[in-house]
Image (cartoon, rainbow, N blue to C red):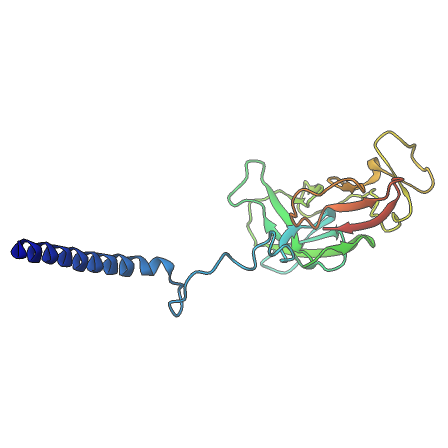
Length: 242
């Protein structure tokens, strides 16, 4: 009986020993997945700079609101290059580093260079105090295959069909610099030119009105969307770009 007991105790000891070895091996095998790239630090969360609930004030490279003009000039000296000068409008103060980047790469079927007009957006929401002009330049090397230039902003696009060439457009949109204290009128509710009224038809596309009884779904950072906070009488008490 004692011999059976010793055998039983021995079997248990072997099982515990094997279990400890297996557990140690598994822990060692899993360790790299929890280590960072430097110093073996464990992973403690997502990118702290990511835009979203914990980082909605991150500056982002975003299309400017409007493109207003394109001028393509050809240099007189050889090698002759084409310089593209573009002007536009951003929604508010706080934007920086305007630039032109290709919308896609490769030769387009229509022989028109497609550019996107972008800039670094403000880190935080900005009061609506009027649009701010910006400009950028892009150089095309000699012998390029393009016959025209198209520039896209967040709310519009403009095209020059010949190189060299120029193109301009006028933006007829309420920048809401004087919106506070005025009544907001939905589309079709007020004729043009009505005093102390901000009409839906005159606002930049994609605006948002926030009444006293409305919540706000999500906190997506969109510096090209204007928010109008209304009181119970539909009077605008605050106007800001996200």
